[in-house]
Length: 171
Image (cartoon, helix red, strand yellow):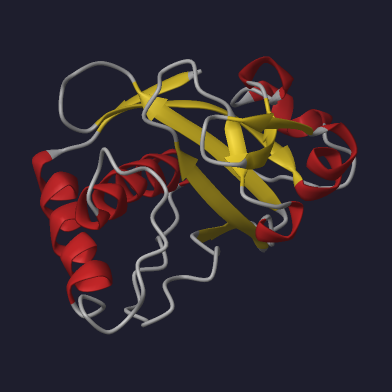
């Protein structure tokens, strides 16, 4: 696990980009939100916290282009590899997708809150798409079956990045 505390500038950026991603869809794009405890804007902003934390760690930009259909899963790129960053609001939560086909990038990172403090993010780890497909299980959190990987199945940052034979990482 790697802890990142987002700066006030990063928190402002998350708010700004979250509004850009969310506000133009209101009344235009059908809401597909499953978690009814959070509104779409909050989900967007917290997802951006995770994206910004991983981007900070690797010194890469996030994809903050405004699109009606969202970012289609691509959040950022690291050394030419496409990355999806997932933010789970539960500190011990799993990395999950609605279906295997929703994991479209080369890698996925799981991020969770570190504390109640705004913008305190724990980067739990990462997994390749191929490993996820081979290792996932199914779980129903009360709103339909999802494909999941538990936290202890993820590679942790940074040393395990070099164990993945499919990718050559440079730092």
